[in-house]
Image (cartoon, rainbow, N blue to C red; front, side, top):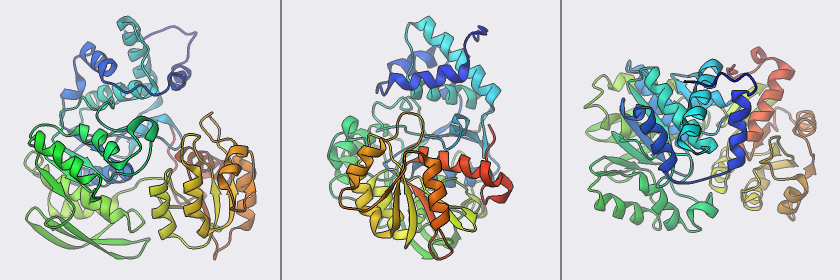
Length: 434
């Protein structure tokens, strides 16, 4: 039974689990699921790993499934404003009462089993149980870190995907692309088709070897499964060829040329799901691609002055961002465990000026250390996001937009400040109310 002790708050308890840090492994999540009758096995799943693009890929796939008439659950991380955003049906997040009920349920369950779950283990367990209670037709599950020992890796998916491989979380996953690919390829399952967007000579052979050992059919986005980009940065258009179809003029609802890669992954997965989900048709795919939304990804949130935010939080994501925009006023904050120096090197050519700051919550790189990481690059430094945002808004113009990047946590904090300052109705995004 859920805990009814009024002396504790579910939200505070959930936040306290962050202090337990990262603990890779499947023992705790397996015990929790076994104790509540394995809700994650009560519906079909899709499982997606990769360094970048997981959330956007699943946003496209969820929109396709919804356009086809299916109820899709989606578990992603991290969140922009509130933890409830990690758990979605359609584009609707878990309600706060549902969150609190699930936290209480699994707090008591874990206590009875003799352990305290990590923050991500708790979130994973809540997602699996909530999806069962919402009677989803399918759940789209994003790996939190790596894959092999990620707590999501107890699902039995209909299809898997690895979006790409790049350098991130190296302290946990290894410091080469081959080592990281080994961890992410751990989500591949015997006989389960896998879609792969990675084409690098260091990582792809590792993924191919894993697929061969598991006799998992591999669909790589090259050769027979191909895509081409056209249109503009803000209105990408894709041509797709593969799995017996050849379609042109697929319009995407997410900005950035890089989204064509994510959309191609989603389309390939959607086509592989058609045997079980026969209403996935060409019209549904077209409608889903153009209607997809994913906040904080090259998102224009204010028109005057133009303000963009992007969740780029590693060098690979910053490279994509640097190709998408020209000169901008850049507000940059970053988590303490990230390669800030490399990210600043990549973004500094488009930053005029570069404004360094921090975000709340304990994960942010302190401003003094961040300034050191900037090295030779000139920068304005502010200890608080509010000060950085005030300065940046005064410098931004139609010709030089404001870009907020470096961390999804920083983007979320800036987003909340913009909502409080201008009101949600004045902004270009739909503010999610928990």
